[in-house]
Length: 157
Image (tube, rainbow, N blue to C red; front, side, top):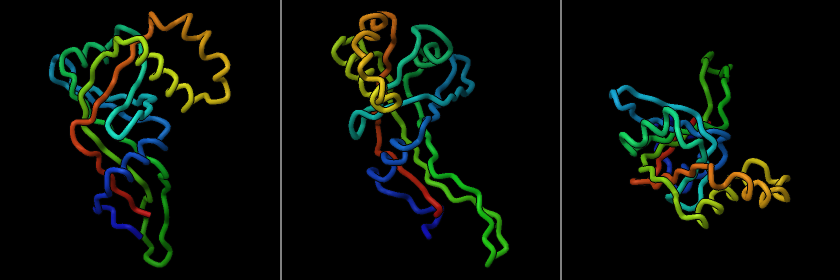
């Protein structure tokens, strides 16, 4: 069993992000209060994540105020009762990272980010991708998160 406090390497933490269906992205509101929400992120490489959204709203206001975000993800989360110890516990894998957001304006990069998102979440519908891009690319906002430090993870298995 891995100890819950043991930090894992970056590759292991990135795998947790890849397997989590949602990643909580925490940011700061202009009034200084925290704001976090689960988003469908996709990872492009060891330090780049993307998500898409409308071009207005609270998360956009927050990111304009302060583009630094915290990412957190949990996968394989399962409560357990350990008979031998008569102990209630939870087995999990988790990862955290810090990054900086920026708007993607380059058309080619926007399309690639959307392709990665669709391949991750709806791979069986890629035949419709080009038509969807033609209809909605110009009104879709893509945000890129570039990690500013290596991600870390924890687990208890």
